[in-house]
Length: 153
Image 1 (cartoon, rainbow, N blue to C red):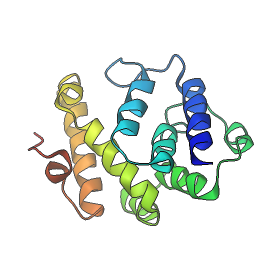
Image 2 (image 1 turned 90 degrees about the vertical axis):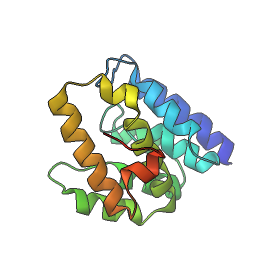
Image 3 (image 1 turned 45 degrees about the vertical axis):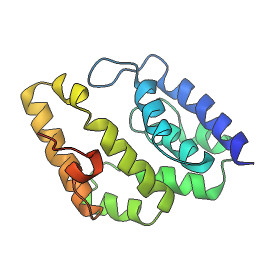
């Protein structure tokens, strides 16, 4: 029941991001929603809602597993969750092993590189993040400009 998975993912993300804000000071759930709207299908949308619940949210591994998401969703969320001390190439290698994770990572990069989001950051943070987004896109076999459909400065 993919639709049930999406409903549960929305509920988990809403709890995980409750009161959390992103680097721009916006409610974090807004990022998850934009990424969700940028992908196709209930499985991809469920993964998109959940893609940052461990890095930026408050959900525990126990709470996550209690939801009994299908293995394909769990594996994709796991692939998208960067581990402490993990290099970008190691992280992207895990992402590339899951078609669901790849689609969500591309949508995540596109949202993170929105001009208004980048413009809200100080120059040092912006430059560091754009370098990281470019490296990630390259490791995915693309470019940030191609993913965004525009030149990212």
